[in-house]
Length: 587
Image 1 (cartoon, rainbow, N blue to C red):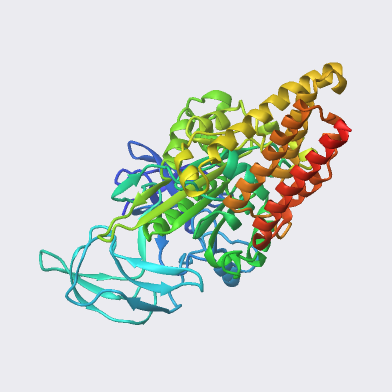
Image 2 (image 1 turned 60 degrees about the horizontal axis):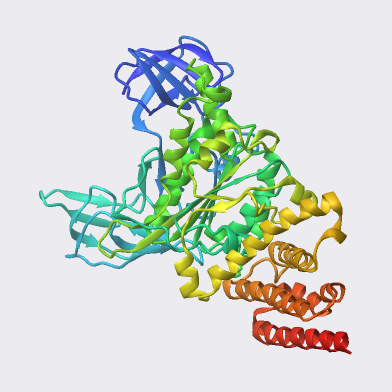
């Protein structure tokens, strides 16, 4: 263990001398208050330390002690439903111990050492195990079964294992290694946060993470194990989009990182999540969620660590074979923490003062997502999908964090303040957003063989509408031909009836893929039949005012048990109304 003394204090940066034996990224304890910090630079015997707590009152000459280990998280039963700060300190436990004001230097373990968990083994004495094998499970909540894994570097023959109630640091299994030594395995393991957890194989991202949000699933889908960025100005609905994904995405576990967001926004999340009912199980959403709260008024250095802590916890559940969705809100605040520390280290600044390594740090974070075959002999598949919110100042996505993110991620959901002001939610701009994941084969085989064809037609119609809108602004609606007016009406239907989705409506908040396909078909059916009627002499004014259009628009509020009957009835009524219109024209 290396010991030194403080030479200089500059905000969250502390420079200590006499640290020649310390290593990069070692966790250190600073001063008698034992503030937690991490070594981020070493020159000779001088170490630069980013301190994760308030440094006011520290001065030269105070002691600094290295723990000899990198910043690590505790992984085991007790994670689900917990609220941690940026370095995995349990906020509820700290509040119970010290009151509502966080005191410095508090040392409370991330996971409770007193609570007993009922361990049910799935292997027996005499079996051989290797790293990543599941040896048993704990019912952590009513909806999450916590699989206990053999840690990395341990393999051999099981000497003893038994069912019972254990704390996370009690031995549940003894393994005899090949060299004859015995290893005790507990329900908890530690993992350094800056190192990705290993897996056997990464799978191609050819399967969507179904979210139930129409604009996402139909137009800009994210793959299971994929990465997406949600940039948008203040008030454009980033947080609502992330809440919807947390509730409805096909994920078994949700890890939500509030990284540098305003305290009141994080308070809303902490208050809302326990009250939100998980639609799949009827239980509280917190029963499958881990929250990491590191708001903008908390120490800036811990903001940088919170992203790594969150993704390491997410990888741990991925290794159990779960589909995990990680929400980072927002990576812009994380980048600002990097910029502040870089400035204090007097590094050469890059664009807009951000460090030159901003892009590579973002890439290191996002590349830890993926759909993988986990370690262990059962070949289980897990997925970790990452959705990062970006908060560019003034909504300007030409700034460095947005641009660096766009170079890495394959899905861009660009939130538009103008859409939000027009009360169109989710305010994802269909003209600027994109998805580079090629999942057409999956949609065509699993939902309907015409899925990609209808999607292409809808995208074409929306881009045509933008061009026609420019003409209307210049010369007015009357200058358009009847087919163009019809196209504008159909595009309006797509916008208002299909892309607009009410997050607070009990039916409209989630739309299955089958229902999304039927909704696309109804709008395009109306357009095709009306186009044909125009050729046969129908009046455009009467076509756009057909009563059936109201029912097409309200189809999104139809419950699943009535979907098919209502769909068939709308199609019949549409043809009947068009035929009646044509007969009147002929008469």
